[in-house]
Image (tube, rainbow, N blue to C red; front, side, top):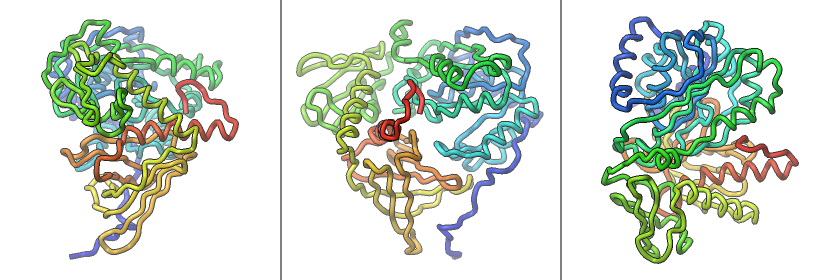
Length: 429
């Protein structure tokens, strides 16, 4: 058997020109999207002229795969190119290229993508961008890249936004094994910038308007609209996001089952109600009824660790898979990972006995992508990227939470900005 070259495998061709959607695939896409529209009955609020023609840019928030189906429907006959992470291409690169998708490795500064977007706009296409670059962890806005304003100003085409509500409630990222079955979703499809406005506004003004438009909270939307979720397993997986007990303050001992969330250290339990709120069932008051409030409390605790210079995941044993191209994952080997005040460091040995290493310094990473129970319950993981490689890193044991690493990545980056005297702007990194 031919020995695999783990250090120099075949790489995904990121330079291949983007395509327009093949004509014969358009009716197939429409047929595939139609059942979701019928099922979820989206309520559309729009101020976009129905006659708006490409080229323009569509910025969308990101909560579930339903996002793509809604966007495709609203764009109508306008040809579109979607920016998609490399794992979306696995085993179907030809198809995704033929429906106009552009490959991107998450949280990398890739000048090639800037050119790819320009090529799409020059073909009179719509370019669909999910600037949060990952599914929302708890149905609220993720940090946005500060470079976005400069990018939009560069292209000088209209910019439209699609902010969806209910997608996270129906299929939360922390458990996509089944949908919760809400009766409808709600979409805000609005003009954000005309071409003329982009000419006159500063980059800071552009970014401020983007951040303002991207404020959303799916659990608040659920309560405000009295959206009942009576799914008996509605809380399953929630412990992956809410990993620290607010009662005893212990980390990594939260579990979930059915409609309940509980701590195995102090045995406190909470019920997730049909309106998406939490209610303590024992051991005193409800610390946080609103799920995003619990999530942000965890952030404040991490922020304090970073401020004190004590943040560290500790040295974790890990399994590492690599995705150099869209054909299949390569098992890179066993190793160790630490995430601390210096950033990420992953080291190990591949099956050929050669060492591997990836270091992502704090200044190089404003956020990171994580997965829960990735690849048919393979495990929770962090994925780290260079311009030509993506590593999926699976920690072993139970004394960790990839959610904490994701939040800490952001807080470490903000701390870095403070140290170099850079002004931190709300909602941006």
